[in-house]
Length: 278
Image 1 (cartoon, rainbow, N blue to C red):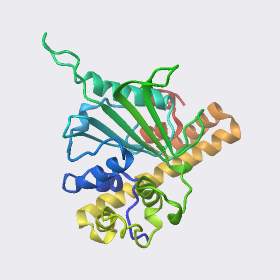
Image 2 (tube, one colour):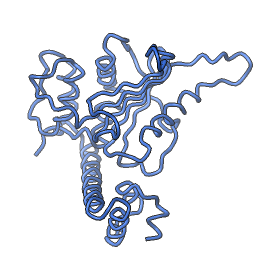
Image 3 (cartoon, rainbow, N blue to C red):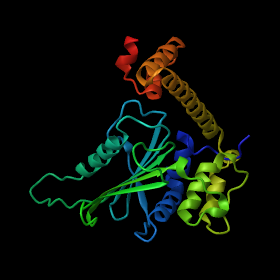
Image 4 (spheres, rainbow, N blue to C red):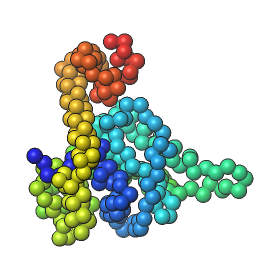
């Protein structure tokens, strides 16, 4: 049995990065992510209902929305599967947060605060070279000089991280190693080097969960594993029978098994309407 929680579940991800009482963990991670650029001293968690809603995200995408003491916005997500138009979705998500800063009245002069999107991806991005970190900024095409610092995307492709513990060179890599291997570790490494990992070990220890937290976590694990199983089945059918036909066949079989339409939609990428017609 695992000693530590699975950070790729809703409860696990929020336990690590989404709690007001332990917000120093998120602050430490963001500072290690942006080392040499900025030093965040405090964050305030905001209601994620301020962000646009996306049908089919439940159980697949877990997000945290916060601002720094300087008013910069951070949206941090854990995503467990590829999506159609994934990069366009990320652009819309962050642009919505930029647009919300507009103030009514004649006095506002477009004084925007920076918006950062940090996307943990438990899959590989398509159509670009595979690497752990893809950092996207607004820049001049010819000179590569940054045009504006108000919009930035940081994609963290977890399957591209293959380093062993002793190979990690930066604190950012140490974070990724711990998150990626957490569920299989007996104790967290790097505690002697960085005290945040000692705090993290206490927080993610399953034995430290209250009865209510454990019940929520167990349900979160079930949802996570169900999603993986359905995704695996749909992908296998897609490979065998051609993508569109295979996904439709997978959806038809899953529907016959009595699975809810929203779960089938998340697994196959088909719309609820398309599934209802099958």
